[in-house]
Length: 225
Image (cartoon, rainbow, N blue to C red):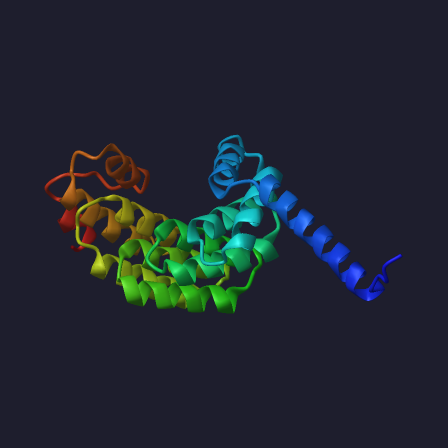
């Protein structure tokens, strides 16, 4: 009977087992595109746990997949897992800093965590970088929620100053925030600017009438504009 080298034999057997398991894993691994389709389907029906599972598998394969990180963060936010949401959305934001949807979800996450310092720092940095009315108003809303009226007022003023005057929505939002701060005159000023931009807008007209201001040619005379 030939002599058998036992350690060598064990090594060969283990190598065979490892190779076999590797081949099985390769044949059973779900393709990334299939995982993405499953994740998209879960998101479309608000099945957040399943979405977390599918997108979690995708980001485990590639941490730089910003779309999967963003979707994972959104699903986690919707399911109430703020820790996972923040981690995924911070990665997604770092990879795609200009993406407004990611920014909004990350801000929502920080707000729900009541991480006010981090939220203010993030929103202020974003607002100064993008210089859009929407981002300044988001900072103002967060400041209102955190009972920081000074930051809120300054952010509203900045939002109106940088707005390009293409849409009445920022002015309506500014007016609502001003009213929450008890700043009726500032609210009327914002609505007056909105009326200048589009005097036919029904929301602007209704907001002015709610404040007892009649829209028309004499609007600036009554508001001091």
